[in-house]
Image 1 (cartoon, helix red, strand yellow):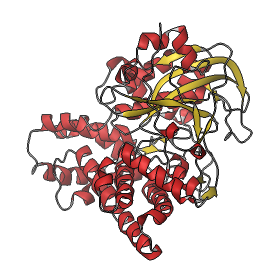
Image 2 (tube, helix red, strand yellow; image 1 turned 135 degrees about the vertical axis):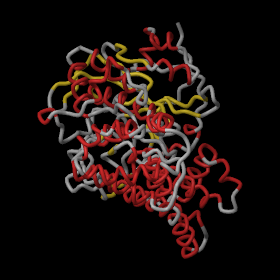
Image 3 (cartoon, one colour; image 1 turned 180 degrees about the vertical axis):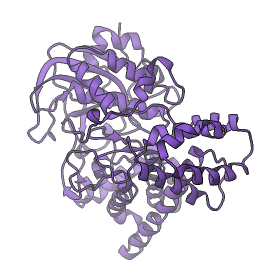
Image 4 (spheres, helix red, strand yellow; image 1 turned 90 degrees about the vertical axis):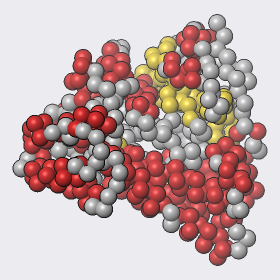
Length: 489
């Protein structure tokens, strides 16, 4: 059975300085751990063929499929504020691009497929735990409706890798609208390669912003498109309590997708200062800092585009500043609209922002669970008879806020039952809680995939409760709390 990829590799047609040609390193004994059959069909691929020995050989990097253009992409990046002029794909290899059933161009990339010229003395491999973590969390983000890279497959390699100890190796097949980052632009800017910048910008316009090609200033329009996508993305992160953990410019996607699920996490108790990443010792990428970090990263992108924005430096800076000035309003509008929907407000009124901020303040004061409190609020929207869980979460302060909320709800159309259903469609019952994910990964590394399978099944329908899996929605007990997450490299 042949696993056929209809490749059309546009990035590999760019000049050689954009990437390094490299092939995956064969592994000892590839074994399929998870295959995303719906995504395979979406990509125009045959799931049965992918699950065959030949398909698993491709998904592990054991052999290249016909038409692949196997490359590691070059990029630079600011990591925790410090600039590194050359990073690149150190353990990821782009096989090529396919056009999916909806006509969208999608990258097919192997992560953990062996060393590349950008590996910086690393082995280019990945462990099963981090691979399954990215699989579970990225697919959960997709089910939540948040733009994200996707996971097509996870394959165990039959080999061990060594990090803090001996770990089972694995390869993730990642799918993305593209793997072009802010750091990709920085790679050419630091080398003063204006021709490379222009080629890259034109490639991005053709791929992600075709309307920008018709604008009076195509590169300003490109910048504004990236700004709009990032503003909307980070607003969506905050609305589900997601913390990326490593918002470096090399992890800031031009396509507006969430990329790189290393030390990411979802908050349990609501606190804007929450940090989980073990390497973020200063709290740079705390939950509440993410909007300003997104703008910081976009400012670095704007700096790279200055030679393209105008011939005169002052004019170019003015163009960049005007584009960057749109971020705050775009983010605020997306975040405010999302909060209103979570509170059951279909249209915005003056005072809604204060009402929403008041609710967040109650949660912060009470140390209430972010996800469960919003989910319980859906039931309270049906009437005061359902208020007991809210009183338990928020204490006596609930009563005063609830009175203001219900006064505001009275000006909305519809009844309590309809409002409850609408709120349940935006307030998930389950998220990939850290303790659940870690338990599933520990079991998987010991050969038991049942916990990962249950978690994947629950996360695939985050707005529709599955009675047999309700325990996966429970927050951690004190002894189950996980205070730090790790990048897994």
